[in-house]
Figure 1 (cartoon, one colour):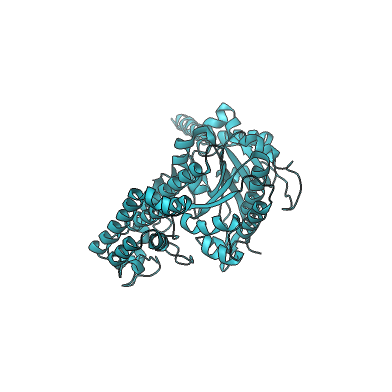
Figure 2: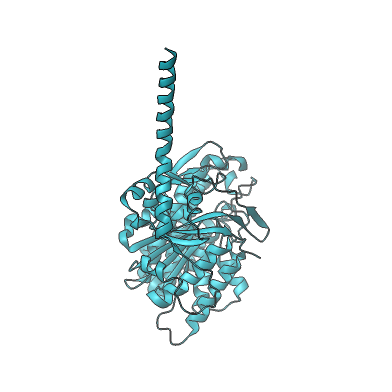
Length: 458
């Protein structure tokens, strides 16, 4: 009997080891394949001539007309630096016509005009034209400076455009220089010129309410959106919907009386005001600042849908020959839904329909997505800094660290069937502080790995 018990225990142990070996064998197969399939990316000075370092990535991109490059963490220098160099390569070698970054669409009109030769000082343009406090990042200043210089060349036949594609007003970020009332204020400014009588009517309807279209998740007071009654919220929503309807109804009149381009931007600004209003309406009436976690996930869904719709407008605005580089967090650019933890409510997770899911359905093979993996390092700028936690060894970032080179790109579309099947399962991406879970072979076409990142600001 004792011998039988021992044999049974041994059999159970072997079974447990075999079960445990299955994910390890898949991870090992991924690492072994990745070591031979990845392409190292050397560190190249910004002013370097030639594109030999980016040619392998360019071959992966092929004929795609929309490239979505992600960053694994905001305020890290290396993803921003690659973005700037990759964009210059795409413009000069593949005929790309625009860049769209994770910044407010309405705010981005300031930068859009500036890079096409409009007036202004770069510092002011950054503060007014880049949202989420990303105006502090020096790499964004370098991008805008290059765009303006490039477009100033009289030999450039088609000028290159800049856009923000995010919901206007940086909802949820009280440190942003322009708040959630931005889009509504801007469309009323346009209407004051295009139709003064209509503008006066809307101003009267919104009297006392417009300044309260303001949100700070760190505090609640009687002059912010949290304190609005149901009737006051409905009044704001109704005014915004009527603004959109008016602009649609008067498209021919307003477009003929002024600039068709300005009308087009004004209409999109009104749509942006509606996006912000939809985001704010996820907030329960009378919500305290501490309640942000209770509606954060639904607000994120609203935001990502708005991002996707704004990108759809941008891509169409660029026309049949247009090509766009999109830059945002890897969170937003996954082609499939991701499982995300609500960091404000530990233990709560949700499946998010991020912007990239809409883009993939709409664009198909026209879209090429690049997921950024990071091993370790620090991020920060202008008073914000954070040391990244070490990624778990079994996470995709941790496994990529076993490939060898400190920087590389990997085309996951070329993975062997067994590796692709393993990558098609749900895996953790990122550290345990802000973990995401997603099937990597479906989320991104390629992976860009950085062993270490440094803060964006020196």
